[in-house]
Length: 499
Image (cartoon, rainbow, N blue to C red):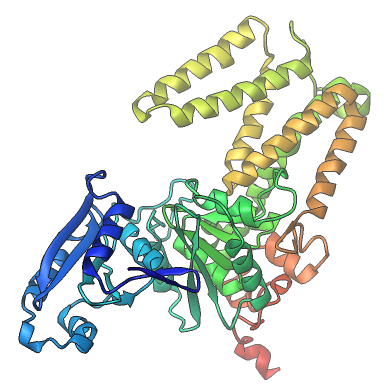
């Protein structure tokens, strides 16, 4: 019979009892993909248990051939485990006696071997998951640079990281999340760089997750560990699908959270300014990188303030000097100007949603329909004026220029909030809503890191690295706000040392 020790159920020496337990727990006979192959190993009854589709057939065949080759005369009762350890020619082989750990191994895709008389099961990690190749992510494309990206398999993702960070201090700690799903979550960091308090905080929050499963993978993990106000629209972690971006943040002292079944890796902690930088800036010369960064900053600012500012000036033309009296509509149309902007914003979101759900061959037709209905017909019938369409389109371009999709959506909500306040209260509404958005940003934290650092609290040295994409030779200091163990990334240039 089975027996409990320290709240765990362990294997017994009875092969029949063990086999019946695993058949019952895994639903053998009910689920078509459960494989239970009973064999004889060195004169003893044994069984191989696995799931069809998660195991490499050639490996399973080789394991069976090796087990069939074991002879009874080489077997001694007290050395059966040792005989099997030597007789199974597979590197990833481990033993376990806890029932729940053995079930986890099978459900993860490994092969379980149980033998009559052995109180330990043998887990052969010969799993293979249905997976796509490491393709370049659509959201973070670059003109120059690597074309590989993370996939939905955690082992592939950690391998892509190790390929770029060949440091013996790189740690990849695996945890399980979900009472039923038992999803693999890897915490990745560099031991002699990353602040140990930050690592422990993240591991404690992941370990404290009590939920049956995380089918939405990394997004579920984020919402369960960030803490604080989860209704805050600003993303408190950064996502990336690029291994080079993940490796760069590791070397700065950040922690990566890699969730199995997700091609997006979580970077923690993250400030507002982490979301407005892109790998393309570092794939060009510093001068071009500065130009790209400033142009992107201008686009992000326009995505938040362009339409509310134009609406405020259109509703309060007395604020304009005489030299700028051309700003504002010459003809309002049949619908109030504020309502026009609101309709344009909602229509833009509807088109974005439709584009996501539209099959690729029909995307061009969707664009033509949107242009005719919103661009031409809406102006012709007086529903919208051309200025509203122009400035809404410019704000949309700014949103799409934001490297972080999550930050782009947060900025979009802020723009809509400021737009509504401006429409109802004119310039006081614009000023107050802008201040409220800034206050929310100022009080937001990501794992105790101020969201607006290095602006608040002010740090000029760090702020310069954000405003100007400096040459790699000048990037010597890691971000101070992360409290890294090793503060310097490289030694000072030789000519500075001679001074």
